[in-house]
Structures are given as C-alpha cells and as structure tokens.
Length: 454
Image (cartoon, rainbow, N blue to C red; front, side, top):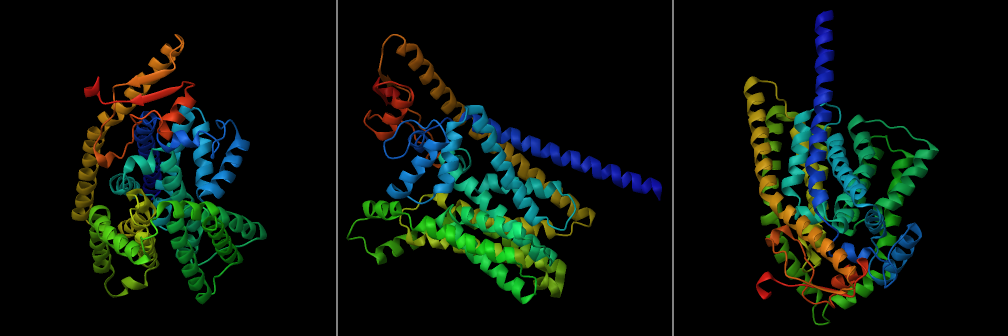
C-alpha cells in the first residue's frame, strides 16, 4: 500500500513537470512569432499621443493620449492603455509580456474547463491548439500589439473576471468580504470598459449567474458589486463622444438601419461558414459523447450547464456584430474564445476510461499536434520575411541618416496572402502611417514600392 502511494505521488510529480514543460514549449513557439512581428500599422499611431501629440514617453503621455482618444475616436480606453504601454516598452520586454498574455488566456480557459478535475496535459494542449487554429486572423488578434491588446488582452480580462463566478457555480459555495466586494466592483469597471460586444455578452453571463445563485441561495455581495461595476464600465465605454464622431464619419447618410442590418446578417452568415462552422461541429460531437456517457442525467451536470452558458453567450457576442457592416474578422475573436471555452469544458468531462478511448484520444491529439507543426512550418517564412525586411529598412535608414539623407524609397513591398492580414507601409509618403513611421525614425519621408517598379 505504501509503495502504491509513493508511485502515485511520483506520477503526480512527473505530470506536474510535464505540464510545466508543455507550457514552456507553448511559450517558446508563441514568443518566436511575437519576436518576428515589428510595430506596424496602428502601432505607429499609438506610439504618439493621440490627436497629433508628441511621441509617448511615459505613463502621463499614455493617460493624456487616451483622454484625447476617448473624445476623438472611441471608448476602449483600458485596452488602448495596454497597447500604448506595450509599445512604450523595450522590444524584448514587449514580446515576453504579450506571450505571457497568450499563456494567461490558455491557463484561464484551462482553469474554467478543468475545474474539479485532476491535472490534465491533454486539456492544456487541446485548449492551446483550439486557440491557435480557430482564432480569426491569428496575427492581428494575438501578435500585432494594437490587435492583441484589443482582443487577446481584452478577452483575457473578461475571462479572468468571470472565472470566480464559474468557480462559484461549479463548487456551489463562495466566500465574501468587504475587500472582495470592492475588488470586484473595480475589476468590473475595468472589464466592462474593454470591448463592446464581448462586454455586453459578459454582462448577460453575469446576470445569468446572479439569478442562478439567488435561486440556489448562494448569491454573494461581490457577485452583485462585480455586475454593477461591469455595467458602469460598459456605459462609460459606450458613452465616449469619440464613438459618435467616428460613426458619423464612417456611415453614409443614405445608408439606413435596414441596409446595415441586411448587410450585417449577410456578412454574419459568411463569417459563420468561414470561422465558426468547424468548431461548432466539434462542440456538437463532444456534447453527444457527454450525453451518451451521462445517459438520462446529462442536463443536470453543472459542467455541461456551464458549457451551454458559454455556448449561448458566444453566439450572442457574435450576433451583436450583425448591425455593424464591414466588421473586421478579428472582432469575432472574443465570441469564438467563449465558444472554445464551451468546447474545452465538454472535452474535459469525457471519461477516457478504456484502452480504446485512451488510444483514440492520444491519436487525435497527436494528429492535432502534427497539424500545428505543419501550419507553424508553413507560416514561419512569412514571419521571417516581415522581420528581415523591417530590420533591413531600419539598418539602411540609420546608415543613410548619418550621410544626411532624410527621404527614403524602398522597393521591398511585403505581399502576403490576405488571410495573413499584414499591412505594409504605403507607396504614398503622405499616408498617415508612413508619416508616423518617419517621425519615429526622425526622417522626413518614406515610401514603399513594389520591386517591379525599381
């Protein structure tokens, strides 16, 4: 009996080390990609105080910039503060922190999905691979600083906020204190102030939790204070004068509400077929397996109920975009991550208790990992091209500046597949992003032309 206990303890320690090792591998893979992506497009704009100010040099400039941003462009102050702080940091520190945010997203999904279960390396791997494969426009939602701040960081914040509610729901008990009430009120304000559609969906999730807790007599003061904070943060974000100024500038007066809804629904059907259909099919398969294993009582299981919750509100988050014509695919990120949470919850519940199921699970994960390696191998040359091109440009600029050159023309326009969603500098030196890039490097002008035009 003693020997058996020692073996179990050793297996537990080995599993923990393997778990940490897998996290290190994930960190390494994502860090490499982060390190190959330079500051580009909106990053160049946010390197300066918004509204035509000087280059950001400290936290005071970030605050002033976001004050201007709130009144001139939009209300996502929290995520844009994160963006401008990251841009302000040294390059390697920025890459490490942004990679840690990816690890944080993986781990918070793992914590929600695997609540009450033993340590599971397979759940960790499946979570990571689902994010990698099903994140819309992977580069702009997870690596590009402005995009990752809006979507990766914004979704990380929302899931970190809702995790204690999920924990309360699964465990059926909670503790409260005055500090917890205050903390969740403040955290709620920050969370509600991140992203329009995902924040509204999160408010609905939190309301649903509070109703359930009330009915089960487990409602705590911090549940209510967190919800109130969420609503306040959401209102502050939506009330930004910049939202209305941007909308007036974006829409044609003849473009009616009906036109917007019609175009939005049409685009939504396309988005579902491109971004969501496969993961939706995975969800259905995993649900059927859970129903088969639980027989008659499957709908009473709290994990499945929690999965349904994320499933429903993921679609709510996505459908809220239907009234926004021409919405960029990256806007679906939060809703798709909610759906991934629902999928991983179902996967973590499957009872892999026979040799056949263990073999099937191992085979599926192995194939999934091989697909990841192949995809990574195919994508890496594009990342290397971007990194090499930008490094070469900067080297030439620094060398020529010493000779008094202030106007630069490069014939190395980066052209990648549209799905990569990378925007190089323009052939017009008066393009705003070209102007910002020139200001960052203390030169007069820069334009990028195709090599054929040389």
